Length: 312
Image (cartoon, rainbow, N blue to C red; front, side, top):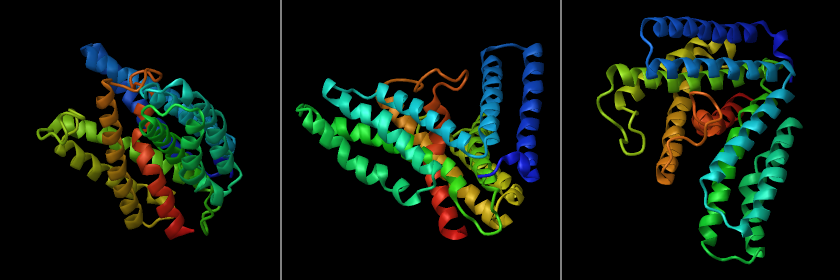
C-alpha cells in the first residue's frame, strides 16, 4: 500500500474531484444569491458535506492504505449501528450484538489490513453466520428467533462484509499496477457516487415514469437510464486511472452503476418497511452514513471480485 502522493495520476484524479466540488460550490452560492429556498439550501448542505467527506477520504489515503481501512471500518460501524437501530432486538440479542460490533467488525477489517484474503472472504458469510444464531440461542429466548437472527446477520453482511470490499481493493496485486490501487478505490467511489447524482439530475430534468413509486418515489426510468449511461461514459473516460482498457472501464462502470442502483433501491425498501425517511442524520444534507453508502454496499463486492478474477 503506497501513499497516493507518490502517484501523479492519482493526484490528477483527486484534483478533478476537488475541481468539480469547487464548481458546485460556486454554482450553489450563486443560486442562493439569486433565489434562496429549501431545495437550494439542501443542495448547498450536500456540497458542504461532500467537501468534508472528500477531505476525510484524502486524509485516509495519505497514510498509504491503513487510513482507508480505518475510515471504512468506522463507516461500517456507524452504518451497522443505524441499521440495528431500525431492527427490533431483545435483551437476549445483546451478547451477539457485542460480538458483532466489537469483535467481528474490527476483525474483518484487520484481515483487510494484513491482506489475508482467505479468511477475509469467509469470516462473516461462514463463521459469523453460524456463530450469531448460536449465541442468541444460548441466551434462551426463542421469541421471533429466526427474524432476530436474520436481521442481525443481514445487517452485518451489508454494512460490514460488503463495505469492507472497498478498501480490500488495496490488497489486490495487479501486474504492472503495483502501488496504484488507490486509483481503483477512487474509481469505484467516484463512479458509484456520481451515478447517484446523475440519476437524480436526469430524473429531475426528464423523469416521468417511476420505477418503484412506493419504495423510492424519486427514482424514474429516465433518471436511471440517463444516470447509468452518463456514469458509464465517465468510467470510460477514467480508464487511464485503472488497469482496464477503455472498453473494460466502461463495462466495469456499467456493472457497478447497475449494482449501485439496486443497492439504493433495496436499502430504501428497508427504510419504507421501517417507516423512516433516512437511516440517520449524521451527514448534513445526506441523512445517515448508510444513506450515503447504500449504493457502495452492492457495488463494492462485485467490483472487487470482477477485478480480482480478471486482472490479478
